[in-house]
Image 1 (cartoon, rainbow, N blue to C red):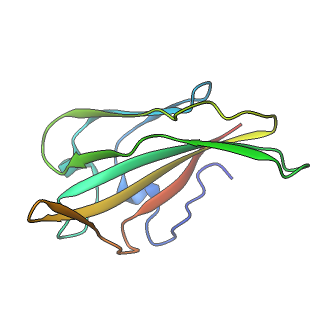
Image 2 (image 1 turned 120 degrees about the vertical axis):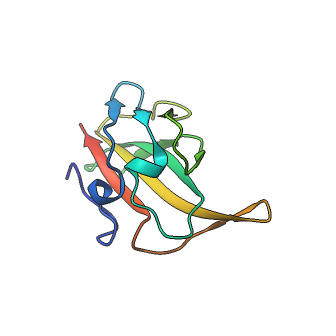
Length: 131
C-alpha cells in the first residue's frame, strides 16, 4: 500500500519532484532544499500551494483508529529555497498499523484572498509510509 495515490490524475511523483523524509516515531514529514516553482507541477493560475500531513494508527482487527493532522503549511510559488516541515499535533494512540499521508493542494490568490483550485489534475494525496 505504500505509495498509494488517492488521486489517479495527480500521482505524488508527478506533482512533487523533491525528496522528503518521514520520521516514523513522530509522523513529521520534511521537504528540505525545496524550490516551489521548480519542484512542483502546478496549475497555470496557481500562486500558492499548501501541504498537510496525517498520521493514523489503525487496528484492522478491531476497527479502532486514532489520527492526528499537521497544521497546514501554505507556501508562495516562487524561486526561494525553503524547508517545509509538517508535524502532526500529536502521536496517535493505540496499536495497529501506522499510516503516514501527504496532501498537496493548490490555490490562486485574488485581491488578497486565496481560492482553492479544485482541478483534479494537480491536487495530490499519497500514502507516503506504512508500518
